[in-house]
Amino acid sequence: MEADDVTVFLGAGMPAELEALEYALGRREGVSVLGWHPTAGGTVEKVAAEKPDVALVCADFPDRDGITACTEIKCYCTPTRVIVIGPSGDNSVLISAVKAGADGFVTVNDSIDDLVAAVHEVSRGASHIPPMMLGGLLRGLIEFRREDDAAFERFASLGKREREVLVGICAGLGDQAIAARLHLSPHTARTHAQNILGKLGVHSRLEATRMVLEHDLFARFGIEMAGLAEGRGGGT
Amino acid sequence: MGGEGVFEPGAVVKSTVVSAFDAPGSRTTSTRRILLAGEPLLYLQALSELLDSIPGVSASLVQPGEIGHAARVDAPALILLGCPPTSDGPVELSGSLRKSYPGVPLVLLDSGTARDSAEKTASLKASAWFSTSVSLDELVKGLCNPTNPTGTRTKRHSPRPGHRGEWPLSSLSERELSVLRLVVSGRSNNEIAEALGISRHTVRTHLQNVMAKILVRSKTELVSVAMRSGIRAGTSPVTRDA
Image (cartoon, rainbow over all chains, first blue to last red; front, top):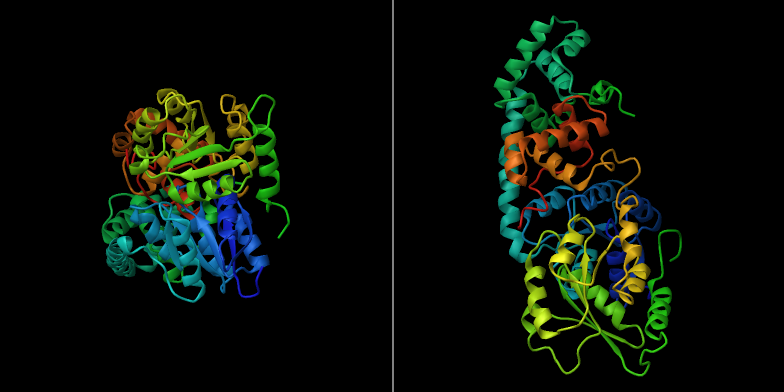
């Protein structure tokens, strides 16, 4: 390993693919691969311990949790830059990656040399997004921002009691359980629930839950999420 | 370098390939060619470079357009076709590969999430299929004896890699995850049924099983747990590009 090589850790992918990438990257000038790990959790641990310049995580299938790894690496190992390897032609993964703080995105149909170029770029502090996907990314982010603002405003219109009831709804509690927790009559809880759906502009409790979680509304309004875990009975 | 989970691919793989190719009766003097085609390019290119580095093996990656022109003078010993479940491109490719290289064993390499690999193998009359969830060493061992990839098949039933033990959704099947993703994206059971081409009763059964597996009692709770476990809303990975 040369002293000024960019150090790389590979993660959250299929063993055979990661191993092959390790070899292919390792023979390129200026890149040193520190290792790889197939799981997201293992990758985050290794990255935290070895502090590579760049972490490459796979998210080319929905259940490869490279996005999760990306979020955690950006949270716990801030100096490490992250590149997500994702599908081409599916903007949703790219958008999730950018939201998770990824510094670069490379598609599985790019070449190894594209990947190496991306590694060098992000290690210098630049971002790397495939130009063909940039338009879709921007449109997606603007759309999300619009929804986000709308969700924020709607949530802001809820009263204090309504917000408390909404915490119960998001924990999957029924009217009875919410009522018992908040010392209300089940009818009152139900009325609150109806009003909440109306104010949020959604048709079901499920949609309401999705909206709250997707836009992280509780945290943004300083509402304790602990109630959520507590309400989830039986899960260990 | 070193540490658990970090492997050195070179040494083990190379010795395996060389010994397998040098089995009694094989012509030790000539170079064995492996042709790689299909998707995803990034991983196939990496794999091709690794295989090519093995003494006595020459591997190259061909683009779809090059197949007809690729030198027929030197037929490969084996064709490795990358076949991700989200793309039908490689399926079409297999036709032209067969035509250009009659009699050469065709081995499918899929990214390890498709359950229909065996079916696909049969329909393409391929010799075998491999999942990339195996280690490279196992993969290469299998490649040297592509008519008998039993190691790969049994391997697929072991717990899938890629998830932490505590990930609450690790017990879900791929189909259940597809259904769950659609639920998270806000689709109704009927819409999910339509998107996946299954009956709404099947959707309901999947959801009941999912809820039993991760110990939630309502769909709302399900979405709540799923989103906090990092499930992203989306279309089905299997049907999206079909």
